[in-house]
Length: 316
Image 1 (tube, rainbow, N blue to C red):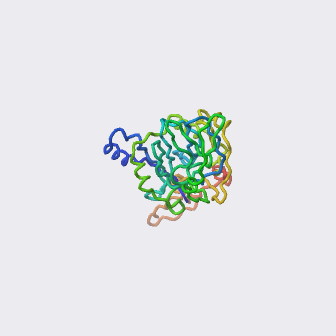
Image 2 (spheres, helix red, strand yellow):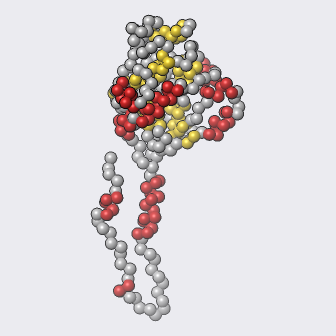
């Protein structure tokens, strides 16, 4: 039976913090790892880009810190500054049989994001959704959807889309391990990871917290098919998220998601004292010459038939 756990990689973080200059600290994030396989990526329609210089940030599965994944909807985010692109976060198979989340970041080049095909320009390697031309971002409409009434800087390039796409028919959402995407970072992607970065913007961070409040976006509730998959702008409330979001569909060929069972250690530990208490005490040694007394023979504890059944949790 699978169990879940979360640990913060404080040791690695502290080591990194004392060995890098202050201007690069923004790129270091605390890794979260769990031993429950992330759900497959759902299929959804990308909302059109609402304003110039907004960058697409793909939806992803986040961990709630307790025992479940929840979907953070994809959305368009204003770039923190001209020339910056978003590298999505991704789950990767780590040491000890755990899935480790590597947070996304802003930089002048797109780095490694696990080879995960998020779609809409993020085909698994690099970014084909557009490019900066001076201080204005030009959108490749072969990869992304834009509102052409407000965005006039567009072009079409199907070649770059084909060259950056990693085929992922099962919509796997993580890298490595027995079922993950088999991709390794290129030297260029490694260099991008070492360059100065900016963390997720305040709007992105708020968006993730709002998504966590939307209980319908939890994998245990939606079985890997969130009802609120993507929004045009970062959400500031659950009501806004649910009103403006587009729904998802189950990915063809993806394995249906089954919620992880509760950790087995907790129930078993709770049962052990009860089992010991319900066991009859050992019989005292007979005194020499003493005759047995049937009247005081320990009687078996009565077991009401209905009482234990009332304590059993309902089946899910």
